Amino acid sequence: MRAGTRSRRTMHHSPIVLLLSLLPAVALAQLADRAPAPKTKSKAQVVMLGTGTPGFDIDRSGPATAIVVNGTAYLIDAGAGVMRRAEGAYEKGVLALNPPAIGVVFFTHLHQDHTTGYADLIYSPAEWRKGPLEVYGPEGIRHMTEHLIEAYTVRRAPSQRGNRDVQVDVHEIAAGVVYKDSNVTVTAFPVKHGDNIAYGYRFQTADRSIVISGDTSPAESVVENCNGCDVLIHEAYSMYTYNYVTPQMQANRRRMHTSSVELAEIARKARPGLLILYHRSSLGGQPHGNPEDVLLQEIQALYHGKVVTGHDLEIF
Image (cartoon, rainbow, N blue to C red; front, top):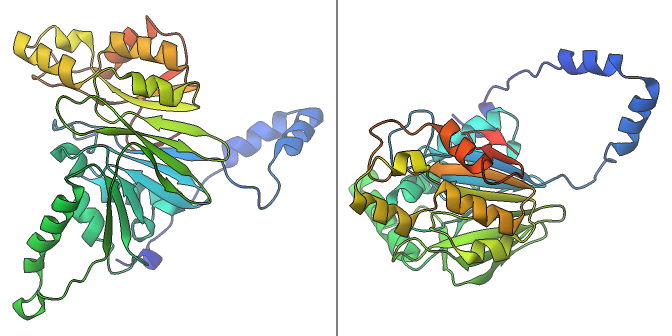
């Protein structure tokens, strides 16, 4: 279905109207004074499109996050289900996540759970996308892109396979400022995900600083790039699940990911206004489940700033 033909959901505001009717006139006047004037630039939004892991959690799509600024979406990672979650956000009213409108993506690293939706991102909205898809990521993203496009030539009739029908501009990055436009400056910084090339990103807008870790074990670069940022989005695993996996898998977790105890320490140093948990690792299995409330409680026991668990399609 073309983007312009989608149905819209009706928003019901009666509870808000009722609440406002109960406010005193002075409070209403104060609210009016605080209301943004027309044409004021909108606050940057964080949209959690996918908060999952390689595990098969039906409530969580593969890792994907969008930063939305003034009607433009900046996508980070493209895990499984990314375009359906983008459509879901669009139908919730985030118009910048109309799938054909997504024109730029930043990859933290190239593991399958962060890239399985990449072909979908390239191809599903290609007929309606205006201009090329701009892609930023570590060394290897060009190879992945070229081979995906080559693999998908077979979707066309044999006589048409020699003509490239998608536009993708690939930028292999190093640490530093990798992107800048009138809405945002994006800085990549190295993180520690085993021996893999992996980056976190800092998004600086007119009104918010937003940092996302990607997959990483504890990295001082996260602290340095947050440093009082408005929002820090960070992966983590619970010590509850860690204690049930084999010693070898425990070692792998320590090398690849960040524990609740370690993240609490990172957050104390980094001082974010809001810490959002995502990518709740279950490396080594989860014989007794991987409850999100346990991870949250472990962090809250050691870190007393504002922290929440991110869920698919939540907006911050």
